[in-house]
Image 1: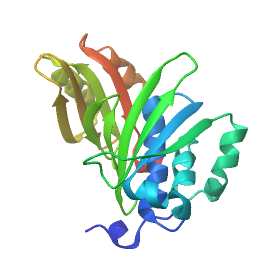
Image 2: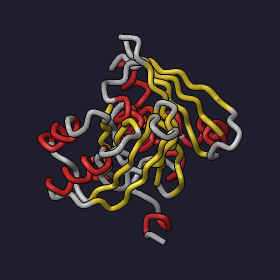
Image 3: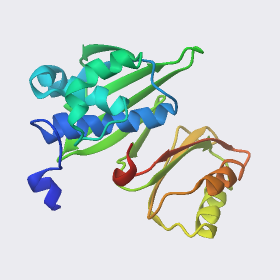
Length: 224
């Protein structure tokens, strides 16, 4: 058991799951969106929906969407900061069979009409897990620098990405591959011992015609 699981992370607020975890979830969801957040609906599930007011989960999620860290004192002012930055948000309670009790569904909307759905859960002790991105089921914790690929399920994609990471001197700590069916959409979650730089990312994006999108989660030290 990790020490953080016993004493919890350094944070502002009363609960590691409902505050620190919620901030980290907001940050990971923001990174998935990949642009400044201007409009978002947050669908709170389970105990998130039941206790968000007392534990400040709403402010914590919003703080993450604004790019704040769990130990940032301005977390308490996230409603005001969101208003100042023009971030429109709506909070909803949602029942979802089989959902983790500390989970939330984000629905982002861009001015160009683009939308993105991200589902994640706070696992305790400040640990979090992304469970779905744009309808695609996966598992990413953000505990390590992480590369997520969205690609077509065809030969060569995994090999091309792995080879370039090796060339860049990045070791793969863990790998999970998910596909919707043979030859259909697929995703790969690679936890790395270091984060890829801009030059390597550019090479990765062009490494295979079946690769559609890359997502980089920088890990806890660079979560903002």
